[in-house]
Image 1: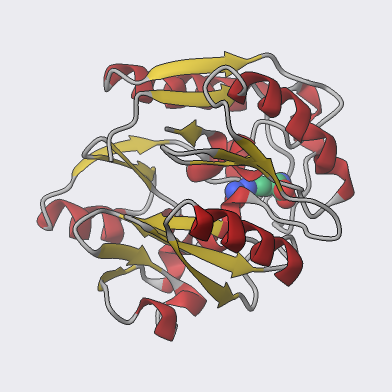
Image 2: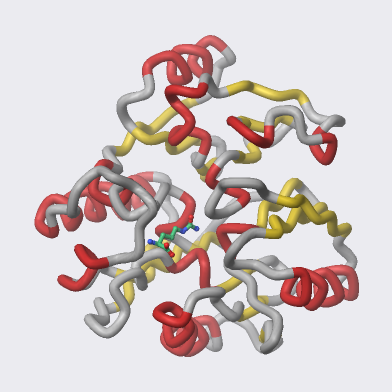
Length: 254
Ligand code: CIR
């Protein structure tokens, strides 16, 4: 699947107070902006149009746009984030997606769902059941996606924040996969590139038009991917990692 567009949102100053389960200290705002610039440039260098939304101080985590929508070639689905401080993020995203999609669906209460829990593998979607995505939200999304002609599977998470915390689809039936997902029967049919435990964070990578964006600083996985023949772009994600953000969270790609 080739992407033409990426929607991104600049981190607000309040970003440094984003939700986190990490113990890595507070992010540095200026450095986060620099890393965000590099992320944007990586898309532009591949000819993908970057649609960059203004920062919003009211929502510290709002640069993680992936959680607010699921975008496919057939429709977009606005999510209902599973934590109160993030629910209001959807309005800005809905406004911009209206320019691209005439058919917008919504996940509604009591269903909650975040895009970080949704992994697309060709015409299949895997939905993580997590602290943020409940079964009701997952069932709503399943219905919408099945009506659009996709196949849908659920994956129960144990400790990951989101499904895509530990998995990425690299194309050609191949998954980059870490930690609790390595042995999950849901993914038995795929070729797997295993991420060593100490490099778990790098599993959250994104394939953008035959180039794989990976987080910088994970030499074993980088080497393995190079040996497998992937074209890589390495991006420093240190400040986003401090508040549980990864490469996939920072954009909606379609
Ligand atoms: C949060 O806890 O919601 C943010 N601090 C991080 C969201 C990361 N999003 C993602 O993995 N898709």
